[in-house]
Length: 465
Ligand code: NAD
Image 1 (spheres, protein in one colour):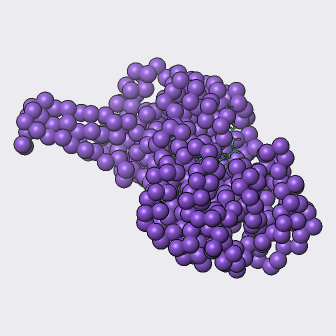
Image 2 (tube, rainbow, N blue to C red):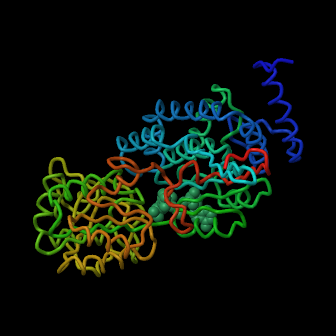
Image 3 (cartoon, rainbow, N blue to C red):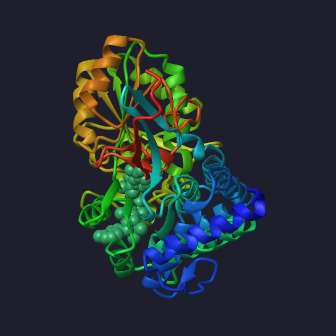
């Protein structure tokens, strides 16, 4: 019988049927475009979808990925508006940009590169195989960009996803899942590649993470969720908290450093984990740096203004929740400061002991500590980072200092002479990702991160040595 398209399609259907039967996955409960009443039904549906997806060709998977990119980009404004309305965090226009970046820049199936070993005894091909069903626990800070990013990279790897959105971002997260599922189905993909339950609760996270048909747990958030992922008993990838310092020494291009810091730290009101959170500037150039920052929209707080702002936003060594992700103008107005035209954030000169230096302050108020020299800046930056091993930035023209900085900080991301977001392929040559897995060491997570190595060895036969 000739191997035409009809015949290939019949073979694929038969293989999927046999694979599905072999894992004893019961009939799929319908779900509403991926949204289910209970965890068990949702996981079973995602497991059945994964078998279908894994049996498809790479070209078909790439078509599905393309459909997710299209749906993410065409809904970028809608997702952004609904995210701001629901979470009350960040800036609409920056959230639009984040949705577009996630849709366009997330890596796809091109990362599924096979390697070959060949010698006297035969040949081994190492291919990138899927894990299966992945539980993805997502933060409030980037609800839809992370769903778009994970949908692309996890499905490109042949996996399906059970999303656990943050309870404070669950409505727009569920809607994004439904919209992306519709796009996947329209592109010829299986139903329920992306699933979630109707109510986001910690019980649902725990039930999904320990479900026997779940193969991996990925979590992005603070210490609580990292601990939960690592104790799930599954293969876990944890992306935890951060407190990125930026060191500026006297050899740096000060004007550029100022622009980079302002643009990056105050992007989306500084709710990005990679965003600069404390500046350490060598004393001799600190005033010049501050002047340039002001030209780019920084309000330099006086000592009295800094005290009032600190009293408003910090309580018991924590940021007061209602100010996280808020516009600087709102924060300043609350303590009687009239912000100037075009102001995007505020900077305050503080001693190292100031609470904002140690807190991951996800809002557009930036502490700046003056240091006697580069060596002191490095030492204080190391203390501020607190071993999160996440992100650190340096502005310097001295290559020995740059090398020493990277080796000492030991962060997953080191950015040199650029904005922190250069590490995600925006204004820099790097791979895009929304998940920086520092505690578990995978770094910026991409398609390959969500695949396993499978070795196919043919003994004898093909020997070209
Ligand atoms: P969060 O820790 O409050 O919540 C993150 C997610 O974890 C949510 O879905 C939440 O429901 C869940 N969660 C929280 N505690 C849990 C527990 N004990 N068991 C199970 N699930 C739990 O974080 P957030 O405020 O939404 O996000 C901001 C934090 O996330 C910041 O610290 C930021 O640095 C970090 N973050 C890190 C990355 C990264 O790639 N490393 C990416 C985004 C955000």
